[in-house]
Length: 491
Image 1 (tube, helix red, strand yellow):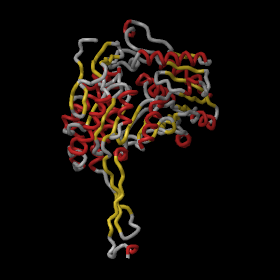
Image 2 (image 1 turned 90 degrees about the vertical axis):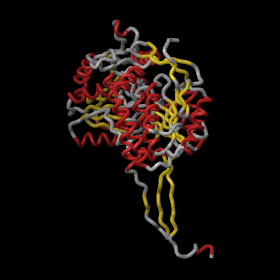
Image 3 (image 1 turned 180 degrees about the vertical axis):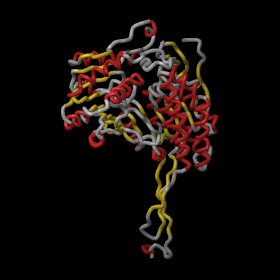
Image 4 (image 1 turned 135 degrees about the vertical axis):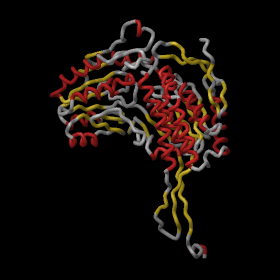
């Protein structure tokens, strides 16, 4: 192991070394270690959750008036902004994203805490229409201990999207970051502590999902799990949750279709398709990885697209000129290479990419070129299975009915894109495609005020939006009797 100092983890507010195995977090651009820590152990999980439950019941956080709890979340947002450059650089090291992208992710995290602080201050319960001699009310209350299990592709933003509404609702939160990207959750825990979140309300337990995530999900004191990650793991969590009768939010995989009609603004469409699949090196659940282009413009469009993809700047994530950084690990790059080989064996042709970039700048990191394949149908494995990398499969279509059928022919239904100058056609396609989010003449734009989630194997539940707080609360109906006489049955 290197000479890096061991990082402590947060167990119910106590900063200490984890009880699990020691491991290193590597910088994907150079494969050099940038952090060293011990994973959490199963006993750490139990101590964190029991401590979180105690803090929930005794710290006063859950009973704090909404505007007072919101003030703490506003301070979290302010502290993130004060430390934005330091956090962005740590995020860059943590998962290899280009610095301009990590700065945007940090800004997103600050905005998420700000939004849910504001939403909390203005959150309203309701008096429902009475149907008798009583006043009826619907109120919401915190659940207790909730778990946030987050992915490695956008750590600080993903963690904020779960932590902020859960804390706003008055819960204690146990965060299980991805094993390979532990740094940002630990930083957020420090910021929450400094902002005034009571001790024990936030815990961070890095480690393997199959060990630590599983132990968290099964713990009887955990009342809800919010998970972002792979569909197989999400289904496993759903099975555990069913046995516990526990609600879950699952934001899972995608194989999102992007549809370019013959009347599209091609400059906008080329730029949008590029951004949709190759930003974040394609390591994005909503990546537009299936491209359908009207046959009359297919050859010209894909030629332009391939030329633009070939010109993308791959390299050092610290450079502000870089558009694509490395992939997360060597193992993940090997998986993507196997998929590209599979696509070729299925009859696909590589229009651009399909190789590791050459040169001293790329030798140590986990880089891969933006790749476009064609000559395949929508039923090929490479067009049906999530690759989670910079690989696009391009296909022509003939009619809108054919387009809709192919776009919806997937176990996934997370996102989709439509490119057309015709508002009515775009609206029709946007309503016909089955997906949790549809972008029209843009792609991969997000707002914390707008709910996000998927259908089918892309998940359950929604994050973001004002209603996002209610995901972390239990609804209760209350009846106030106003009758002058005793209930007649008892006479």
